[in-house]
Picture 1: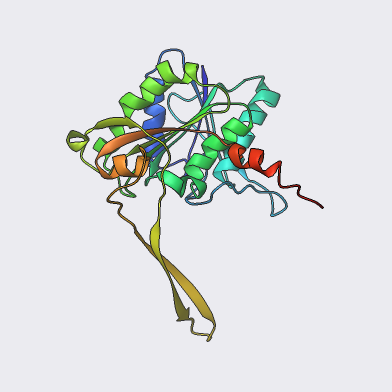
Picture 2: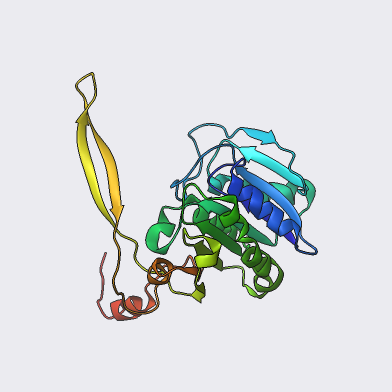
Length: 260
């Protein structure tokens, strides 16, 4: 199995190195890496088009067959990795693994996430994907390495069962490994912040905004959302699709007689 590894924290982040090490322990896995050359968190699914060139640097990583860092976004990296490996070396990627992110990507935060967007780019190129995140920007090595078992289970047992249109989003709470309550399969829930845009003035007299946001804690939500399980100390596993069509509403709209 050929695995493309990427992230949004950059090729030198601890999380991606632990992810590579975990995948190296799975029989039959060949690892290829294409990741940003620096921090690209919250970049969403942006790609580099007419904004300038994407600079490329070859990297040497133990246990990896091919590795490059790019000056572009996580989506750039996955798009480039899949297509260039196929065209230049005749290598087809079977699955994309993105992470281990330093910070959670739970609920509707997936729409902002560079980590999840790297996984989404895999699906857009016909490759299933797994995104793994840990809910702190300063993870300990113990916390990161505690993700190894689920990464290896995903690669060895779960990925072969996925169709090409599926992303599996995995989130570890910011807890010591001994305090995790288990793993829960969940639906995607809401993720809200008490947001503020503070108005400031720079030395030249020009106004600017400084964005801050405090996470909203939920006491209860309908269904089985990932945000509640995550708050309660569970590792959450959420299968995602990129088709956001509202099929129920579309059926209703057939009778609305919409005119141009």
